Image (cartoon, rainbow, N blue to C red; front, side, top):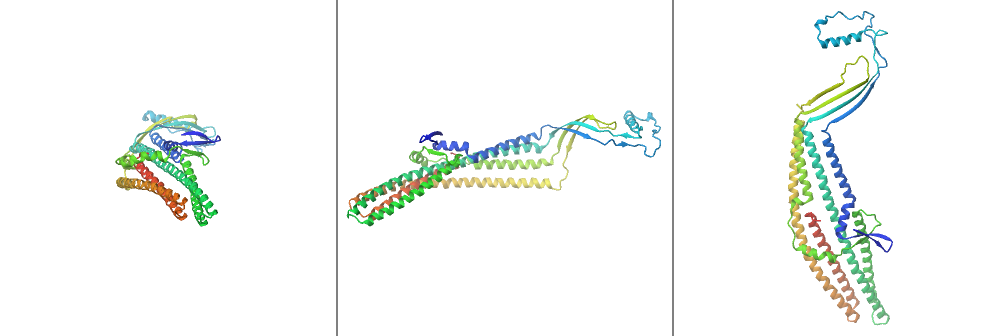
Length: 449
């Protein structure tokens, strides 16, 4: 793509057919959305992986009891501890008893005041075993692959639309050139006929008939001009350009037809696995297979480990909690009322449906290949016929025009010959467009755009 100055003022985007496709792939907004979806899928894979990595969480807690006082002797009785035979206690029991005795010792006021407490803690957890975790990562990666293949499919659709619109603009421009030439010839004939009618050498009705025909052709030109602008607007949208941007197309139909005629005679065989839609279906099948594994792993146990460290910034004397805690957690599914079995069964049914859809798609693609190949051959044959018809119609029109100028034929004959010629040109242009579209449809099916 190159940018050129048009009339010394406005910048114009200049595109060949290939450059237009490349520019659309880089700038089309629909494709940008598809790429952002793929980027989102990448982050979802990262999220799935991160779920099995070490998790570290910190917390800071503050508790106040508003100086609440524990009263161990509400009845006013003796607070002396009972006599205890310490020889019967082991070391652990002795330490606990010692703390309890300290707690039961009367504080000033007859009890223990619970002071404010502040703890800072850090907890680390790690997943050691979970079959669903590893299967979940595989599912996330398959989802990413599907998103990437959706980009390819969307790009193929955009390319097809760009090529089709590009062709349509070229066809319309060619037909407008034909109409302009026809208008110029009819205006010359009308002037000649009017002069002859003024001189009494021809009937005024002859001039009127030619004028009516000329007006019809001019109205057709106006309609084609509006269609041309509409097609340019569609192309701007596909390319991601603003509506007021100027576009210049460098390729011409005459340059594209020779290569197209050669390709129409020899087409490659369809390779179903190269079709983007079929590739997505293959990924869907893999996704369904992994979904069964995911549901089966719900029967397996899950093992996690943790470690917690607590730093006691403010504490009361009544504190028996340790600073360091570590452990393991083993979760073993025992009975779910048939829920897990039902989910596995559903996943298997979905896999069967996906495989049937894949087989159906393969058959549809092969049938489409045969139909499109048939359409291409028919379009090519019709193109050759209409091409010859234009030559004949133009020769007839020129012959009748010469005879009309000599006064041998009437204006009605000339008008009819001109109508036939324009119809032949229209049929020829239509046959070119059908040929281009038939070839384009096969190229898309073969992923060859």
